[in-house]
Image (tube, rainbow over all chains, first blue to last red; front, side):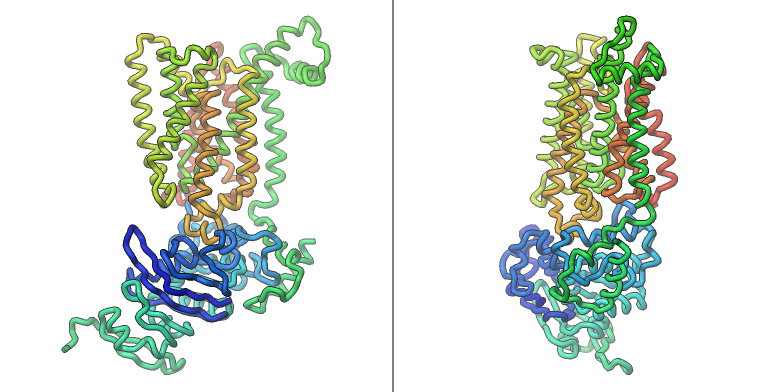
Amino acid sequence: MDLELREVAVSAAGERIVEDVNLRVPSGGLVGLVGPNGSGKSSTLRCVYRTMRPDRGSIRLGGRNLVAMSLRESARLTAALPQESRSEFDFTVTEVVEMGRTPHRESTLKPNGYGPIEALRAVDCLHLAERGIVSLSGGEKQRVLIARALVQRPELLVLDEPTNHLDIRHQLEVLSLVRRLGITTLTALHDLNLAAAWCDHIHVLQRGRVVAGGPPGEVLTPETIGAVFGVRVHVVEHPETRVPQLLFAPAETTGT
Amino acid sequence: MNDTVTAGTTGDTPQPGPRPGDADDAEDVSEPTTRPNRRWGARLPLLCTLFGAGLLVSVICGVALGPTGIPFGKTVELLYRALRGGVVPAEDAGLYYIIWDVRLPRVLLAAVVGAGLSTVGVATQAMVRNALADPFVLGISSGASVGASAVALYGILGALGLYALSTAAFLGALGATALVYLIARTSDGLTPLRLILTGTAMSYGFSAVTTLLIFQSPNGNAAKSVMFWLLGSLGGVTWRSLPVATLVVCCGIGYLLLSGNRLNALAMGDETATTLGVDPAKFRRELFVLAAAVTGVLVAVSGAVGFVGLMLPHLVRLLVGADHRRVLPLTPLAGAVFLVWTDVLARTVAAPEQLPLGVITAAIGVPCFLLLLRRRGATLGGR
């Protein structure tokens, strides 16, 4: 299913933090949100996974208004990895993954999707099945949470910095897994080069507004990124993958 | 059945991005997810049976043991006659009276209180997402104590006679929780930390009021009886105490047994709960009302028995893991067994004097708890 945000605006504590965001994730596509800290990436995602309510605008998944659904109904269609996630309770990995079933009844589960065991196998964590979630490393935990999202059998995956705290190998593995799954995905990413390598489209947020959007090659230009992040940027082509890669230098050394 | 289902599912999954409508046999495919986790799963039915049988034996022992020791066989015989409406020989009339009118209601109420407090403990810990919370963190016991001491020391509500104390305790508990609720509430609903801090602060306030009442009291003896009541006691329980408490506890446990999945989701955090389709604010409100009602009723009949709601959930988690779908069936049974024996100790250790239940639960609970803390430091917030 495709996801479409139209003129979405969000406030927190009386202050507008997201203004007129328009973006579309095509069915099966992987779209990235990038931008400086506080630019409204997480708030935009929160509107989609329903922990914040937009002031106005519409969020439609497969043509249906997400905001008007019950939480349970939208949770059957949307799985999310929020940034928070620390439990005081030592659930086992299997138990955490089984929680993906929470919004479902037998009749609401899509056929032929992942069960807990298959999901753990897909993220290469089957060997952790009996471990306590508290004992896992950051990378293992992130992969387990993705397995939980798979068990939810969603039409849409919303990820908030899924590569946070991961070493480079696991960063690549998580994104290539998401890519392979083929589920419509909207993700916030800090790392612009990862975004360049894995996303179909990238939207750049600045102070709550989308200031650029399009394929990575068009969006990740020295002008746009330099202006939004306040740094100097050089773009080089990855010698092997041909993906544009960004090199950074501090802004204050510019001659201009 | 499970085996064929698993085989089918495994075969189906490698294609990513399954589309709805590929097949119509949704029921079959989803089956493996309900398979319990190997680490604990198989033990639950066994443990429930064990604790259920243990509870039966404990109740009989609880009736047999006491200042007047009654032989075990005699106890069973008289209980059986009482239940089946048999005739009691004249020489056993005294024993029958002790068993049926004095001890049995007391033992059964101990079981109900133990089951209720420990189960509400599980709910409270998930609600405030803190493994060190107990039902009294919401200010319930200290609120109840204000009501109870006002009655015991100043004879307020005298018109209610015997029921004055429990009525006042219940009203105090409800008043305290309502106050905590109103103060802790924000536009985002109840947040865990705010709830704990408000409950704790209010508890100190209510305790201060209780202390003030005791110090201002003209009656020295009354102060002692308030103290005794505060630490929990089942002395003087009659059959009349049972129906309301039993009903409320059963409803509470029933509701929670149906909410295992939602409690799991809530324990993972509010954002995660939302993405799993559980409205954390609404669910927390429901749990709050449930905890206040059950604890209020129990405090009214038995005083504030500490440590049960804190410790029993942890002991049960040691046996079956953290998953609420397994913790909830076992906790009431374990809590009931625990409190039946606590009460037995309370009336036998220093007989003919009776000790407050809180002294016994603390004597058992504190060492157990410290041991737990050492063994499972990481999961209790240490690390």
